[in-house]
Structure formats: structure tokens, C-alpha cells
Image (cartoon, rainbow, N blue to C red; front, side, top):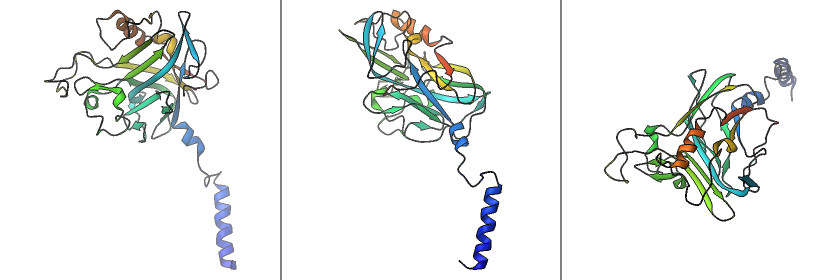
Length: 259
């Protein structure tokens, strides 16, 4: 290295060090744009490997995935990055207990503190497309009923000692010429849920499984496929509206492990 090159190199080095680490990757910006999501069971984290005790019976989680959409903070839209689990307006969270899991939301910009809002479910404009040709994460056929009804916004499958039980949330009362045709007008019951929480930096978003299943008897004949006339569905719909179903928690309260 000649003397001129040394002078240029040293000048660049001094400038870099004097900018308080400005030449280093800003890991704080990266973490500030992410929001971890976790599942809380019955006084413990819920996972695919551990039994969940409901009404003195052991149940095993087999599938829990859900779509969240239309994020905003202080009533200003928040865009997500695009990856296999996200589009700018929506994300797929949870696990199928087969190795396909996602418990992170990645936003396009760091999230300031304030009132964070989102919707459990999908907008009508994207809810009735073909999952075989849709972009990820709307390409999961196991989360789709039909072109007429659209996607399952939340799919919960449990296996008990004697039988299985399931709750699949989606829109109902959707009118079209056949189940193979999407409706042109919004469904009679959208069955989406708007959630608003106070967010502080470093917190996680937690879904309370015990609150979702509160007072619901998990019987062989009362799995809920979003039929509003069914007693178990009415109970579950009421639980979805409970303010404590979703909570913001500090990182040390529960660690997501529903793999």
C-alpha cells in the first residue's frame, strides 16, 4: 500500500469510528421491526409435544395456525415485509406440528410504541381466491374451504384420549352460484375480529389458548366449523371477542415453543 492509499484508508477508518458505529449493521433497527408471537396454554407455554389439560382430560395440539391482517399503529397503516409467511397486509402465524412454523412478524419499518391494531382474519378482497395459484402465505390448501367460503382464518385441531376436536374459523353466509365460484358481495358473517392493544418496545404478542377454550366442552360431536347456530361456536365466538384473548407480554413471561 503506497502512502497516498494509506492516507485515504486511515481517513476512512477515522470517519467510520467517529460516526458512533455508523459503519456497523444497525441490529436495533432490525429487532425493532420484528414482533414475536407466542401461544400460552393452561398456566404454561403450549407446544405440540406437551399435553394440555382441559377439564381434567389430556389433549395434544395437532394444528394451530391463523391469519392476521390490516396492521396499524395509532391508526396509521403498518406494512409487513414479503416472505413465505407474509404479504404487506397479512401474515400466517402458528404451526402445523409437522415442522412448518412461524412465530414472527416482520414489519417494513421499526414499530414505535403506541396502540397496535390488527384483524384476525382476511379482507374480503383476498379471501376467495384460488389457493393453488395464490401467492404465499395464501397458498395453503389445508387452510381453505372453497372459493365460495374462502380461507380458514384460524385452524385449531386437538387430539384427546378418545376423540379429536377442532375449531375452524372462517366467513359464512357467502352467496355465489356454486361452491366453485367466489361471491361478488361480502359474506353475511365475515367472522373477523379486530384487536387493539397497547404496545411497548420489546414486548411479544401472546394468544391465550385457555381463554379461547374457556367454558367450551370439547366433545366428540361439537367441533366448530363456524356455524353460528351451533352452541359450541357461539361460545367460541364470544371468547374471540374477549379483551384478554390477546395480550402484550414481556419476553420473560412465556417463550414460544409450539413447534
